[in-house]
Length: 161
Image (cartoon, rainbow, N blue to C red; front, side, top):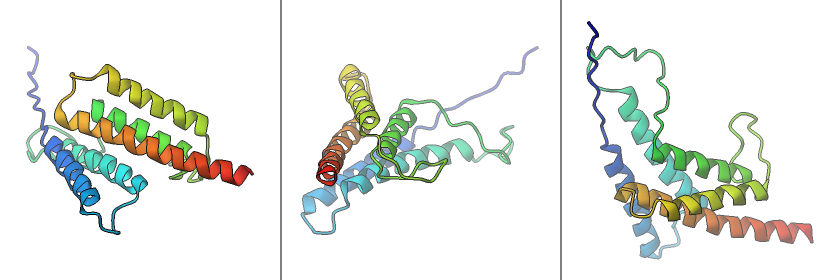
């Protein structure tokens, strides 16, 4: 007889990601000189979503759940993690953050543009099929990365002259 495993999905991270998105939007509306840079906003939004997912995956709160909490669990494959991964890769290729393996900063604007275009395509193709938090994350990620790409490309052209 097979042992039945009960699984539950905790999606409360979505509320936290939405709250972070709203907080970032309010920072921009305040008009103060203390607004985060575009890069910091993208990183903050993505990291916040990932941290909330991680917390939910690694601490189920039930000591009798049968999970081995001593070893890190695999990252859940979901839309938010996928968008986050593509966003971080685009920032790495723009030279905004160091590569996590080599800890070196390198620019490959063609690859960065490809990733941003991929995110924009996903935004178009998934329109009407995402929940509010997924849609907001994807929209803000594409928007912020496009703005940052233009800025980095302009700086690259200035340096080339």
